[in-house]
Image 1: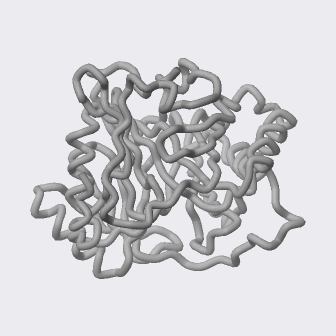
Image 2: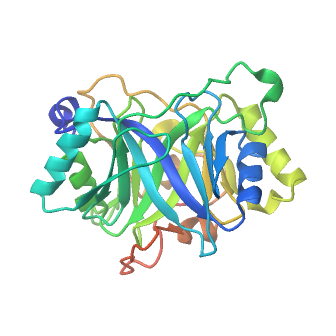
Length: 326
């Protein structure tokens, strides 16, 4: 299950995870959390919207925070495409499937396309962003986790296999998957376009809902410092899970809940997927000690709670996010 042909020759070329847009109730409080705890930097705050990025990123934003009086939601997740022409190709591709798309004008972005996907996951494609100064070597001003760059999203969906295949049909590649030991049903699938295990992770449960988005940091000390700062700022109870290690992706993690309940994962640099002919690694749910080799079991909130997408109804035939825990 490599789908390397489509990975190398997709109908349009997604290159990586790009940006996520969240609504928040108190913009100042949210910005303070993401700058002080996660260590992101502000590119711009304008008309009730804040644009942030990691210290390694030159793209204008990877996190958008939108002030709202409504309950906090995720507006959409975003992916970068290689060229402007890929926006045209994507529009044509989804039209042939009978799906609607919308050209949108976003501040500080080039051509952008919002896709009303059959999964219900609202995602946006953009071909470019205005550039900012990389502040990776501005050491005196680094804070919190020193978040480097956005890495991936995890979205909860009721039909992992079917929805996973729909993303693979336009070029995503399955690096790893988790199957239920009794039925071989897909519990989780790790999809990627860049050379690490994940740009989009799908996990089984009532959805679609955004479980978390992840930023990379350089070392374990940064993760611990973020936890310490969260405690200093009164967010200690919002360090929801970790540190720990995932078996899939071999990733170390800490999960935080922001002031509006959105979940942020801070991870160490993921393992690399260098060769397109590598087979998908299959994890069996019976091997729980390998899926989470160490770290405390996931809390009920981690298993069940997630951010709703703005104006998207969920399929609740599966009531819980049935991610495997110890």
